[in-house]
Length: 337
Ligand code: SF4
Ligand code: SF4
Image: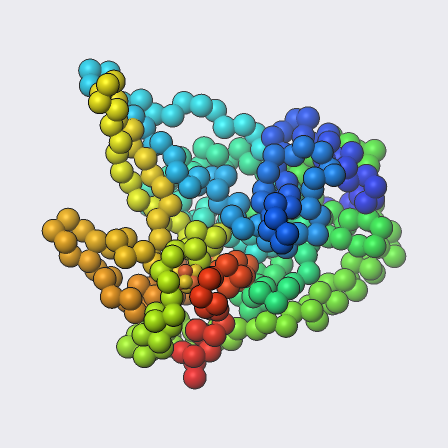
């Protein structure tokens, strides 16, 4: 890892150059307070102050719906052959980079998921520092900073970005415009340290995750699950916006005119009633409290037992999105109490 600085006036020129060599994706403002990752169409569209997009970056490696392969009577099976473009996603905050790290582990566990990895391996990341709002839980989840996954990471200072160059791809990006980067000065290093301290002091939302996996297991029969499940609409929004939720459904659709059947996979949600419904009519999680509880147990225990950390990155999307005002902090506090 090496550090360079890039002046704020130089960032548009740098991104223009990057977009000439890669498919560049950036955050853009969509509604009054909503943001989305979109193909770069000029620096004037880049939302530098955004905090979180509605749909997380998992959409680029694990699309909401994709055809896995198709088969036609007499012609056999064809898999997707299109070559994904070499891409750079700009503006990822530490929580979303941690989310990608978690998905990398999920889609490598056992059989490597080629559909995920064919896109993921061709994508680089330029991270961007951020300041927390009232939904951010990353400090509690220990995902408020990142030391891997990214290729370049830009820390915002007054006049410049302190740029961490972590990988060979990051170095290649810097070499596209070496005239824009220089060694940091002693004053910029001091400012960088001050900014870290200032940011730490801005976190107001804390969730105590001490022994959380144990508590969730011990409180498996708690009436907390019943209470919150009465409020929950089971719309699945919290799952759809989560950067690490990765459940999917697989189904076939057939065109009777061509006798071609496509096998699709699309995002699904454990909160939905038919998610655990199987042939014969049995539903493994038919009751509302069971479905509500399952999401918490899966996020905080299931993955942690295999990889040593929960799958919540504290991005705050679920709390901001929930139409019933259900907040993970409130649920965990209720279990703790
Ligand atoms: S977004 Fe809220 S209401 Fe919808 S399923 Fe999730 S917790 Fe329930
Ligand atoms: S559970 Fe909520 S806060 Fe945690 S990563 Fe998913 S959307 Fe973000």
